[in-house]
Amino acid sequence: MSVLEASEIMQLIPNRYPILFMDRVDELEPGESIVVTKNVTINEEFFQGHFPGNPVMPGVLIIEALAQAASILILKSEKFKGKTAYLGAIKDAKFRKVVRPGDVLKLHVQMTKQRANMGTVSCQAMVGDQAACTADLTFIVGKADQP
Image (cartoon, rainbow, N blue to C red):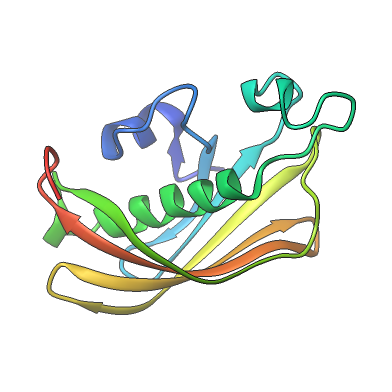
């Protein structure tokens, strides 16, 4: 059973179709960790051009999905309620497996450091038991209408 469905996710983060890259939150420990599911389907707009006849999810969109999962983790804390999390840095991003239509991405995000309105998270995007992408992300929390 999921912790948050898509409609509840949209109450927390400003992303909407076609740039909302998660279907549900499976596990959430506020301030600690989150696991999110993204079902990858052939109907995704980006597959029209990336690449025709060889559909591959762009790495930058996998990073975006991880950043969205991190945003939910961050914004579920009382301290940041009603704010927006902005991506500040991407460190040590590695792409290890191609993600294709039909894959289920499990986005694992672990809080590693937090102070004031900044912090870092360690992320893994998994397909089954294989890591598709790993990265460390830095975030900055600001007002919903400005960083």
